[in-house]
Image 1 (tube, rainbow, N blue to C red):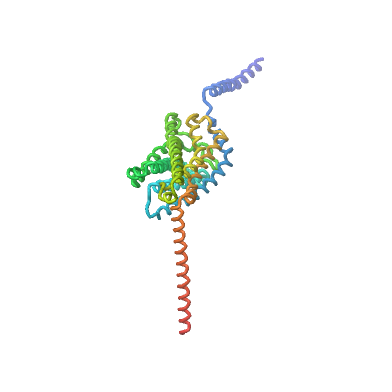
Image 2: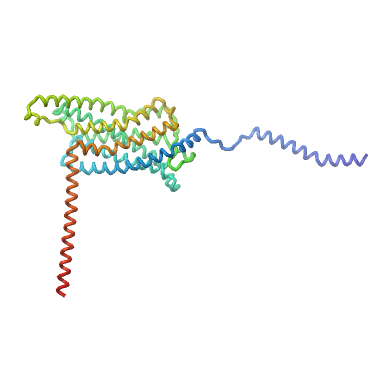
Amino acid sequence: MRSCLLLYLLFSAHFCPSMAFEATTDQDSVVRKQTVPDNRPTQDPFRLKISRLQVALNDVKKIEYIFILFLGALGVVSNLLILVVTAHYKSIGIPDVYIVTLAICDTFIGVFGAWNALCDNIHSLSERFYWFSVKTIYLTQAVDVAASITASLILMALSIDRCLALKFPMKYSEVWSVRKAKVLAVITCLISIVVSLNIPLRLKICTECESTKNWLPPMFTDLGNNKSFTKVSRYSEFLLRFAIPIAFMTVTNTWTISIIRKSDQFRRRINKDARHTVKTPKCLTLTVGIVIIFFITQLPLAVFQLDAIVFYNDHRFTVGFECFVILSHAWTKVNSIINIFVYLLLNEKFRRTLFAILKIRKRKSKETSTMATISSHVENEDRNDNETDF
């Protein structure tokens, strides 16, 4: 009996501490689970939504990339050609100042639009290029928007200029001049730059999100999350880029067309000899043509800007609406390449100067080729003479 009791005490002394330790450790683990938070990373729903949207829009972004690169290259070449032709003018008038400014703006649109497309699509080449793209993409986009705003305001100025020149020809030539038109172009450019600076202040690239091959994921900065600042920025861009220019161009060009119609009716009434003495200001049909192209190419983006002002971001981050945004931005680039075709069709001075430049180039190339053949012929004759002498 004593031996059994002793054996019991030995077993109890050996196993009870471990059982007590296990009980306390289990309790501590339960308390630890209740008090210590779970540090496992949870993915933000917004970032998850952006990642899914990237995958869905991959094909659309590929098409946009090719389209914008093609339009950018064509826009740079065509607008540099416009600048070369206008540089050969014997005298530059007020409309020519506006046309040159438009060509410069369209050149910037082509260059920086293509750069933004490259940043989106080849940022994965190296880590340095990725960070360079992240830092510069919205700065270059701001330059692109500034050039677009300047082009809209300059086109509005051209429409007003032609309307007033037609309505008050003598008075307008006394009041307005080429120098004043140049000053107006510079002031317009500075205003556009100030307005477009909101883009790098409101937007940045989400470096924590996974970037796909053809899209750097955007996100709002702290200032961009401020609805008041965002509304002011969007209102100012919409007013200067779309609302004010479209309103003024609609009124002035309608007025211009009605004046032209009345003058045509007047010409029909007078005799044939007097018809040739009646002159209308230049660039009227050219201005109307450029304005029509502006309306066609800019209206989809104007609709998007208006939606952003009214509904903020309620319609954003859906596949259908983002496709519309991508296509409307790409469609605006068409405006930067179409002007040269309008000039060739409707501007006789531009067409004549371009053909004269091409003829001079051909003549010079022919002269150089003939001089080269003559010099080679003379060298051959001299060589033959030397051989006969020996």
